[in-house]
Image 1 (cartoon, rainbow, N blue to C red):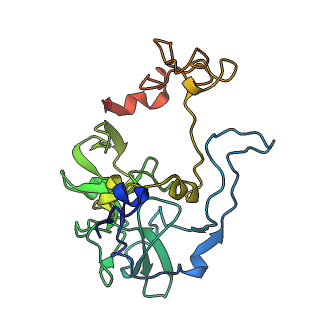
Image 2: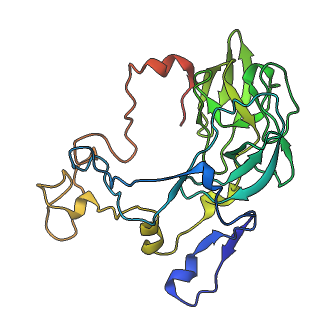
Image 3: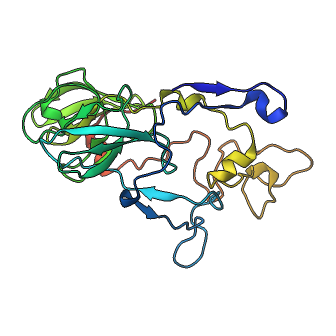
Length: 277
């Protein structure tokens, strides 16, 4: 696991920095845990673009990842660490004694042959890959793959290299410091996985060329100041004119370039102790 750089023989290779894929131990996914993935190109059921800059990309198969970790008190063995085109991190293939196989997010420092377990009620060893409720975790534990509602499955801290930390416990809630620096409270009955999501170097990768981004299904983004006035609030002007607007906005008039967009009356505001900066 590391960063692979290239000799600057071409303009593309001058700044290109990729993963060396040294952590990958298997090149093909477990067929029973995959499904064909259909692409929408950012269109809704009426065929209209509702999410810009999507389209194309390489054909992919979706890997079913176990975000619930609901096979309790049964120790599983890590069979392989695999690439997943649907997420920034890697996934690990786990096999249980009854021969059932599942994918989980690959935590850093988890190797092939290691044992992982998901606890139902009691505390288990605090080591990467083990899953338990937050009320069984000691303060200071680094976690990822966190639930917001008990039993619904993990929705937070799932990207490559991310982690949260258990800061405090009070009544029925735990205080977690999120990757953004935000401190929020989560119910103690919610589950989380010990450790940091693997592929920590992901933030240092540089694609090197537009084509690699197109392979991922991401289309080009055009600056608003390069458009006509009919297309964008920043458009128009003579020559290379700037945006002109002291309050930069999106094509639909919403604040852009750092403007706050969170609703003041958002119901989850009461769970946030300290906002991210």
